[in-house]
Length: 262
Image (cartoon, rainbow, N blue to C red; front, top):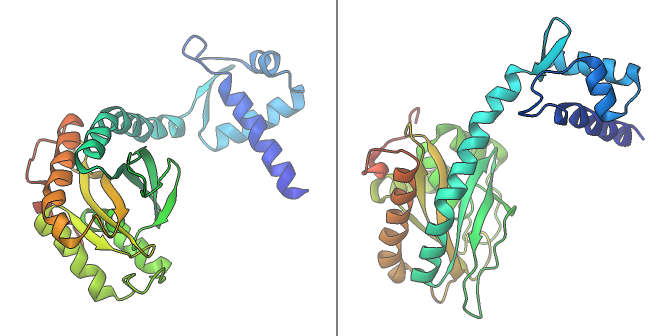
């Protein structure tokens, strides 16, 4: 019951925030009550809480979206740019490599698939948007660790769980892979998250040089071999640089950028 009540409060808070639009950026309590149809006491309580959390700010009798919402706007816009720019490149790399290709962003100790183009072959890696995977197992996660010290710290604190016999569970092994990313600009990994599944990934940087995402291909170990990676790796790395440039990143030698604090 407590969980149900908390969800209902969150739903009502969202109803209040949804009242604010480009055409109606400033509203009074009466406006919010009219738009939502919620009781006056409920609206008053929700508005007080949202103001306290800086999700709304008050100016006399008027309310508008708060500073906290504005702070969230920047990363949301950046993610939108990443998908808009990266989508066509992902499809192009899928067509070149013949393997499932995707873009990942980091969320805490995990990486999340935000864009995918599935291979058109019969036996494929069946990735999907919204898929959540660990940082330390698979190529894409190590890309984040190579250029963001917080990603490496999060992975170590979360524990290096073994998904297969090839999952790196030793810090030294993990750091060696991270160094490979920095020196080559891409990384190949074999069967770390699932037996028979190999992957290859490269970084994507934003306009100020921070790691914004990772572009990766995944497929059967019979096709994405260590030998094939010598050709596929530079191709995926070039795709990462293309997306980075479209995001405003000026430095071409992105893999030479070291992660601070390690």
